[in-house]
Image (cartoon, rainbow, N blue to C red; front, side, top):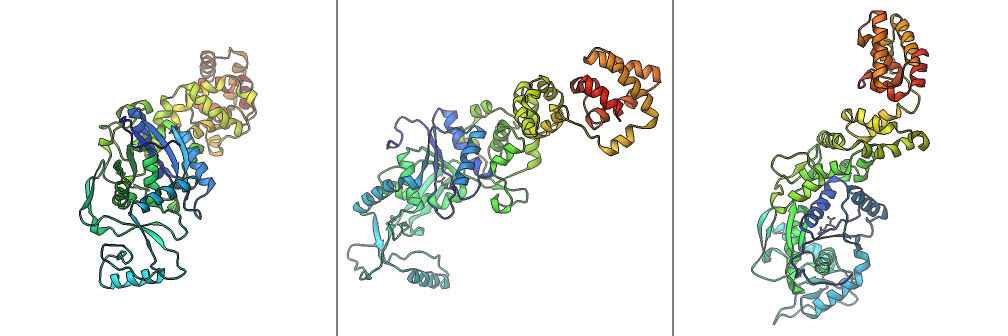
Length: 473
Ligand code: GLU
């Protein structure tokens, strides 16, 4: 990576910086969508950075879900993925510079001493904080360095004054420096800590806008002070409110949030997911259904919601259904075909051209591509009628009409109009009404009476199967 200083060209540069410590869910991926959208909407750059310094909890499998999920949703990055573990030398070099400039000092306080300090402060009803024992000051004598103890490094937080920023979501936030103690920025083994790495990365990657979850608001004043100690101005911040699950709890893997790739497997469309997630914390008037292009045209940081958004699976399904309906039949067939292959329909059978028409006929009644594939499968394999429907509709009384229909359909032209004419002819000769014949015909040929118009359905099932199924009841 080339190290650039904060973008002087005014070009927007955003990033998504997930920690691969669990499978990424919808609440997390929304923190990718907004910075991506802002970069795309402004002609800027979007950077993917994997914050994998928690070695015990980070996994490659979680990284894979992040990358696969973003790819599926079309949240393409211009740079990265950068891995923090591969940048340790860079952090250490910057740390050394910061130490040389007098912003960092070693602290030899042991864990036991820190615990005792915390207990004392808690007993006195004070906020637990480091008391600056090892902070060098003019005229102050530091305690003797204990033998054989490796120190942590602490950042010399400015004293007095406030750290303030104009958050694009939360408005102006001001924190008194006196509230912030001297943060540990390197462990005894010399490895830099999280808040320091984030700042070095945001500087090196020339990030102009940090758009992230509001669980990081408490880190921001500390990060801003580190920016300034490094001689840089911090980026613009937008801290997004939490996404709650349907029970109103913070969405998390522990309480059942699904990995984002599971929505792909359940038949959701990327554009519908983008639409749904976009609305989970941002609005454009009353618009609920919009395309990716419209979203990018409308998106800015001025209409981000301030309150927590709640996930609603029924609404997600509805949004998906709207996008599914709006999609071209060809595009839908391209999504459904691999699912049918997975369900055992051979590729050459699918090449017969019916799938596009099946999608056209059924897309209005499906809210996922999986539901559409379930319908489509009926046209390529065997059918087992729903027993209750068979009992209701395929009665002894209707048997002669079904035989007559099978005869008529084995002789007519095979198109919708001719099939319809065959039905009418049988209805007239048997003195029946349409539902009395159409319902059993549907149950026998596609397994259920709940289908679109019977002539269209039968045409797609094909003459041979229709005639055989009507006869072999
Ligand atoms: N790695 C952090 C997280 O997954 C995000 C840090 C940031 O965006 O600054 O919560």
